[in-house]
Image (tube, rainbow, N blue to C red; front, top):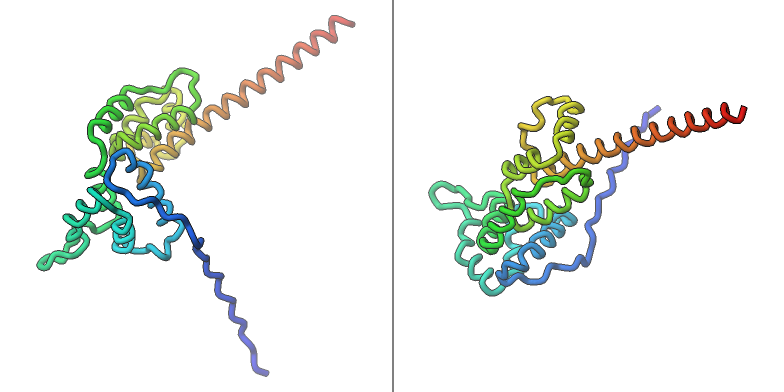
Length: 225
């Protein structure tokens, strides 16, 4: 009797969304930069199959450039192609292209102002971590601190008890000295630590309140007796 081997069905191919709205064309105006770049990143995140390579991503951005931004791209587009002798790419990743693109089009005066404001800012006593992180995210859109500088700022500007909590609850006791792998993870790590501490404090406060209520009720019963 011939044994029939059943072959597992292939997993369904994840379909990309259709008809996503494309970002408006970017003319090099610095005030529009922080709106343009996140919208482009959203396209790449939601359509990873269509834009899977560095070259495809850069070409997509180039199609959306006009005015001064288009002039900048045309003057630098050779960086997308390998050099004849070394075969080395200056834009060897989309991240490298993106950093250079943003550096060329941002308002450097506004950036310096945002940096100064951000680095002078500290988490206020009793301020919720979600509010503090939101404020720093807004600053970072203009200040554009490096990952290392951002991590150092966040670690030094949060409340001391949050830093203590991070060390106490982490397996890695050198967590404060190790820069996370991305800007997003810098914010996430700090936000998670602060929110966890706030949750624990809330539970302790609730437990104390419940205990006091029980004591009060017991005392009231004894008085009636």
